[in-house]
Length: 573
Image 1 (spheres, one colour):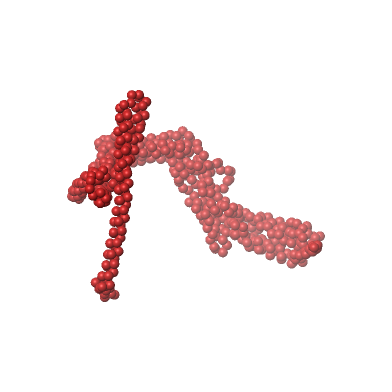
Image 2 (cartoon, one colour; image 1 turned 120 degrees about the vertical axis):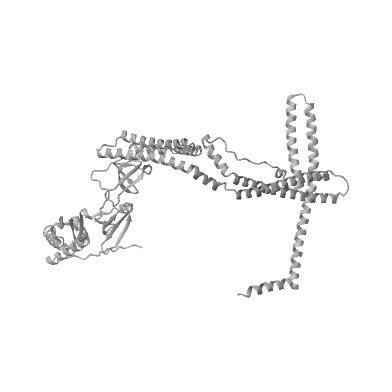
């Protein structure tokens, strides 16, 4: 790898200096020369065509000038006002056409529109008195801080414009030179109108180029000088920031302290008032809410005025102007948000769709509006961590209602056994505003979003539950089907469940003839059980079925097999 690159470069050099390299280089130069000649010939042909068109346009301009001159004479000879007005309109139209013709002549002569050579002048960005007079010192300070940067930027724009004008002038003069060359070749002697025109317009573009070059050089020198001055000085944004911190940092700190101090005192007064109201168990009436709201608004205004007083006493007109501008912005934003603000005020006065002490549903979960204020307290006593605070604006669009007598805040509590998704059984080990965790028999954990868990409509087995089992016996026991069999089945099942659950584990046990099936007498066993045995739900179901089979065996009864009935149907062809 070390010698590969040197060898490669040597090979390239040898190839270039070899006869083959010289031949390839000559071929390349020859092809380039052909392309240049082809382009030059194409330009010359285009210029020749343009020259013919230019001659026609010059004749047209001459005719239009005669027409304008004739109309002017007609205007001087006219005596009636109507005739004069008509002639004036014709003159105006003729001048407009003459101006367009002149533009076409210039464009054909130079290949550049005459509008491109015009200097529109410097466009000044002027901040008018749309802002109040108080912000003018701040604007002046910012303008002073960015003066050098803005001057440099303006000079860069001017320099770019001057370079562009030089290029435009050079293109125009190249075209004029080509046109003059072709015109002289066609008519070597004489003083034609085309030759006079080309000479005149060439002088004009020489003047444009000279002016553009002078502007470019002057601007370049000013830009270099300004860059050198800016590099030596410490002014600008950095100096402005340092000066601002040194002269106005303390003023701003004092004003913020005054603003925050007034708000802090007002907040302490509001909290003390709330504590006294809660201590004396006084209800929050409409009047107290209105006074609280007005006090909060008044406190903000007093705090802002205190900040302005600090700026005024320190004669800091810049920060005073900024604060005033900030106040105007807040006022404008308040007008834009007026409908939403009105709705929030109605809520704060406890007159809106959400009211204190009522029940509101948020993200599918019910909540008690414990305290309705600028920051509202919501509580759900059945959930772990079921208390949080949110801004009153988050309640806009919601609706509350009074809670019903003994209406639960959640269908389950931590530790309850539930049946969900059909026949799944588990114990609630955690329920929060976000998630509900259930431990199934065997130890597996199932996690649901709280709103999703409510959507499952779970059965709470810990409040008590019922188990129903259907059981069939043969029709040959029909004589004792309504008397002896139900009693003996109930006694046997009851005795077995007492051994499993004890006597307090059974509320009620019934065995009744449910219906006469196709091949059997169907009995229904209904066991009503208390919630504390919910963890044995599946065991109880299995044990009841086992006890029923035991009773059948003890008493010699018969469990029938299902009978299959085959029906034949004759189909005629």
